[in-house]
Length: 182
Ligand SMILES: C[S@@+](CC[C@H](N)C(=O)[O-])C[C@H]1O[C@@H](n2cnc3c(N)ncnc32)[C@H](O)[C@@H]1O
View (cartoon, helix red, strand yellow):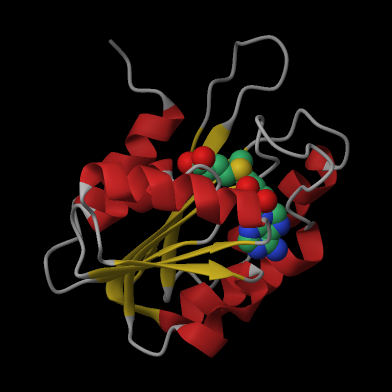
């Protein structure tokens, strides 16, 4: 069966992760991506602005016996305050956490600051996956801002791709992938 964007996002990052890698989950939520990255990397830095996300993720990591993730109650726009080592792989799932406060959504300005800092911190060959959910109020604006920013990255420095369903009704999420070249 054809891969969904969310599955490709994991495969794309999995290809470059190993036991020496540093990974970043920029939007922790319930910890799906944190747990996935932690299973492959040396250490994961995971960010969210909601305590509920940290609690849910910690519970999940405890159940899985995972202890190599640092859960950070702060916005991803402050990623450089916490992550000093070069980053091998990072992921964003934009939008809101369906099971929590739906008014807490990622915002274009802070998302772009975080993307810029993470791209700066990526190792050569490092990868960034951005899952764009844009069906909610404000989502379109963030989608456009991210696509505008990513499509203007210097092609000598980054390869950038999208993977998107184009014949579905509504606003299915899609994936933007970037790899650092030099
Ligand atoms: C679509 S959800 C993430 C889902 C998550 N990947 C999972 O596995 O459950 C988006 C998350 O981003 C968080 N968020 C919003 N603004 C943020 C910010 N500035 N920094 C970090 N996280 C933020 C929200 O609280 C929400 O939990």
